[in-house]
View 1 (spheres, rainbow, N blue to C red):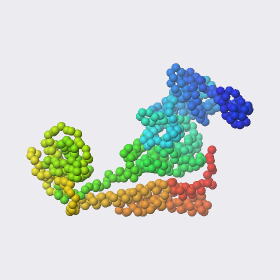
View 2 (view 1 turned 30 degrees about the vertical axis):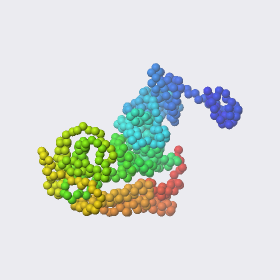
View 3 (view 1 turned 180 degrees about the vertical axis):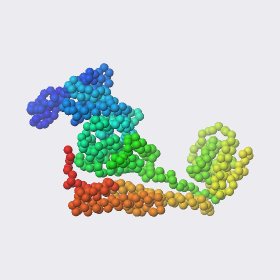
View 4 (view 1 turned 90 degrees about the vertical axis):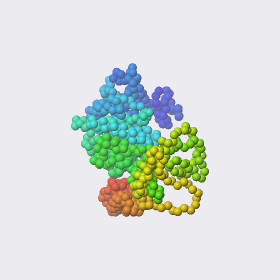
Length: 586
């Protein structure tokens, strides 16, 4: 069936009759949509089924191996380029690249050759699924676990390519195929079309020429300089950022604007797009991967993938609010708070100690000795244990019943409990100055109760408890911990405002951090950075008002390298660049 365009009304339609169904006119343009390659046999064994895609240099077709039914993808070089020596050599270079990179996350190479008309082709594995670009567009973004999993898989195959002296140079979401399986996402890296075999005989790019996709190019690619494996590290960092946020970090309306951002602007903050992505370890990894100077990046894909995997937060870590996530890491060094020690001198098991754990275990051992039936309820529920004393729960027991249990001998359990409590309580009593530990008779009754816990009594006047020196020390440490946490919260707020470019609010938070806190040193460093940005911004504004845009751009650039999110810096740079940079670069 032919395809027509009506010359009178512009309608497009497919029909056997050339007369336009809209206006009835017969002046039409007939287009032949049949593809000469469809149903053609290639290399005597691959039958072309349909076209999958079209590019500037060629087209990709889906084919089927005759007799087996195995599907492959065949990439054809356009006939007009098949006679160009350098382009034909580059196409051969691509085939060699596919043949060298043998990896589960790389497409499998099948064959390189020419059809009967002399057109060059590469037959390779047909990858089902969607590319990463389409996956992100449909879902908005990937989860943190999925994004890091895809990135590490791509890093794995590129590490293999780098070992074989191959640099991809055009890594982007469109070149990463994604297939979802029972074990998660599986990635395949495609299109080594402009990959470079790092041999002197195969360097086909002219010095100063730009090859790649601007939104994912490393700064050295943008500037037309020589590239190495760290260019792929940069591009993969940008791809990972886009997978996490669904946004391209260096985007713009013109090629010139995109290239300027690649060279000048730092990677945006993940948390500025989604609060749950405010993960400093993950941000630090991507910042290093996307450093403007390649000497500051990870030296290879192995180091990048290792750091990225270590930055993956646990599910428990992800479930916490942003402040608590960081506070939980710092709290390991904080002082534990405990109930003031009783003045009786007996040993008390503090939380988090071996004695505390043993006390819990001893309690668990006592549970089977409780007779079957409902628990005691009322204002003073408690349980009497022989030789230990009266132990009262912190609150009223719920109105539930324990399941029936077979009678057991209570002697061994009670004896074990008594020995454990005697040893633990006595040891702590000695350490805390409570005198000699009470002694339990291994073969007879306990000489004196080891743990004395006052039963719940009716409300009434009681004397304030005595607090010994150890309790005073713990209370002071607790106050100090609260003081440190308040300073830390101010520092965290200042860092958030710094990342947003709100320098004045960040400065106010930092100036309110006390000098005797651990956060003060970091606050001083951030205050110094804020001052440097504000000084460079003031200098740039003054030079711009004087008409010295070149010098002003340098000052703005100094400010942007410290913090590229300050609106005043962006406005100043845009005003200076309006007269210096053309709207577009072809």
